[in-house]
Amino acid sequence: MANKLAGKVAVITGGNSGIGLATAKLFADEGAHVFITGRRKEELDAAVKSIGRNATGVQGDVSKLADLDRLFATVKKEKGHIDVLFANAGLGELMPIAGVTEEHYDKTFNVNVKGVVFTVQKALPLFREGGSIILNASVAASKGIEAFSVYSATKAAVRSFARSWTTDLKGRKIRVNAISPGPIETPIFNKMSLTKEQVQEFKSDVTTGVPMGRMGTSEELAKAALFLASDDSSYITGIELFVDGGLAQV
Image (tube, rainbow, N blue to C red; front, side):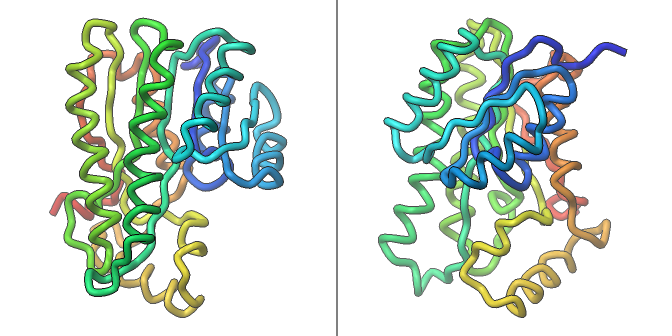
């Protein structure tokens, strides 16, 4: 059976770990050349090595427009076009409304919202007609998760972008979809300024509401992203695909 992304060029932001790296590996296995980004060079280089082939790493922060310009200049120079974009890079920290600071707000919105807007905008000149854009949203956009209001608002914005950009880009036949993970076992939990005990408690709390009774894996998300990236979803655009074990569905 032919590879689902044979000959395609894919860009994945935040591709150095977790969901982004699992997706990059799967896309490469399915025949795509993948460009991945990450802020930390050592981690990015290790990710490129782990993908093994058809991978290029470009260090950068999606909230910095100059870094995005450098990313797409590299893609243009090496491949000349883009077929698939997975705007995956994001961050989240637990913070009750009473504790929200301007720094917390700006950091979260700059990466999760500003970063997505300008990642997509700056990719468009390289996009082939009929390409696929995938935005990484979250069940947090649909659920009222305690102490997660700023993060949840950023992901609600991302979901809205998928609708608006579907209509903006229909003339170019570019499909835009959001993928919304539920609780996924990724390194993000280790970057939430929590103790190990607090991380375990948080994981236990969020898993309690999952009908499937467990956290998901990055590989399960990657398979959903592959579906949206490939011609298997050729008549699907503007949707939010939940990969959440049923958390936001019941």
